[in-house]
Length: 143
View 1 (cartoon, rainbow, N blue to C red):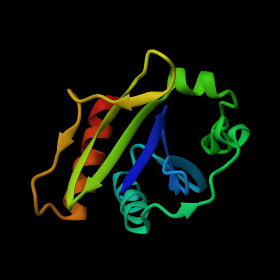
View 2 (cartoon, rainbow, N blue to C red):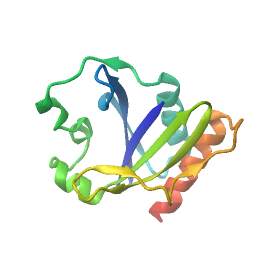
View 3 (tube, rainbow, N blue to C red):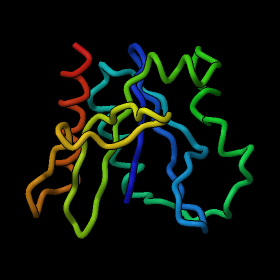
View 4 (tube, helix red, strand yellow):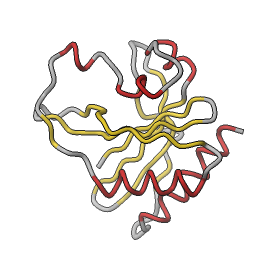
């Protein structure tokens, strides 16, 4: 299970993350937008998206992969400008263990995990524990 989301200004953009038949992940509709200060709303959105999981979709053509579904909901319409101003986060679950944290910019373009920033939740953590910790971390990082 993988969930990526972006924080831009006072808003959090949480797209559905699908897994393509080719095996890579792609953000798709629907996208939830919630105010960063709305902790309860953000917890609900993250929990809903995590429970939904990653739907499997046909592999999109390269041109479709170059666009970001988030831009449709953002006041910024340029992906390069959005990427410069936003902070990207990721929640990952494997074998019942959740990890989350901010992503760092790759040198060749795009984003990747920052092992120094990733936080591993203890085994047995509930989904509520996870989303509470994620929301607290995201809100603290924006201060």
